[in-house]
Length: 310
Image 1 (cartoon, one colour):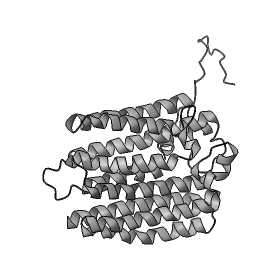
Image 2 (cartoon, rainbow, N blue to C red):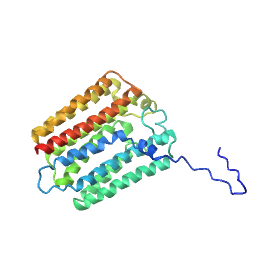
Image 3 (cartoon, one colour):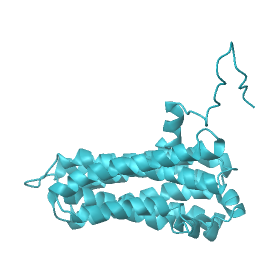
Image 4 (tube, helix red, strand yellow):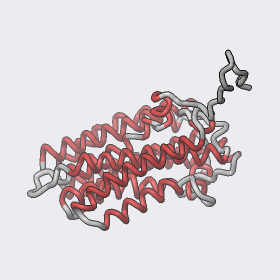
């Protein structure tokens, strides 16, 4: 218990209300390894505008900021909601601010709302200069991010997390970026949105595969818990395979340079071998980083390939 005895006649000191995390702790709590899921769809959505007359390139930084802020907001919101429920008390992987006691629940909740608010402000700029319908899309994104693990019936606990990730960090982020750049929705944007969605889902699936034992114990029925260990491993592989099939489809309906993304197949060998080899717990942590690198590599190669051949 903190000592509150007066010193030299001074008034009693007040105990701090809670931990004061360092900047490094907040950064770790934002889960940087998940950020490729926010960057890649924006890059893919933006490159659809290459070679198009009247493309509004100034909107891309705003779209990227919105995507990153939403990702960070979702991560903090999950940290808060899982922490106050007690479902993060036994967890392997990156630091959880609330569960570890590194930050108070209130501070993490405010951080989540701050990130969502920042995304809303940048999104409002895009809506004001493009279409006010984007306000509805943005509101849906924030609500989906919060209720993923928040509220009385979080859908992330019902096995629907992959649906959220595919829709919002795949289709919405990619197609939305294309829309603010071109103010229309070419078919190529939808295909690339599916590529981004599959890769983002693969990252979530690995995370949930690692957490199957602890999630099952606390009643968190993720899709991985529902599918079971073996089927979840093959689901991860199928998501990566589908992403590369869709890259080939993108090359058929759009610039042939999209085929450059297939080079990234080589980067999947190690994580796929680890997953199919039966790694569990901490053994799957490197797969998270490797999957993030696959995302970035696909995004970079497809973006460069399309830009050079558009």
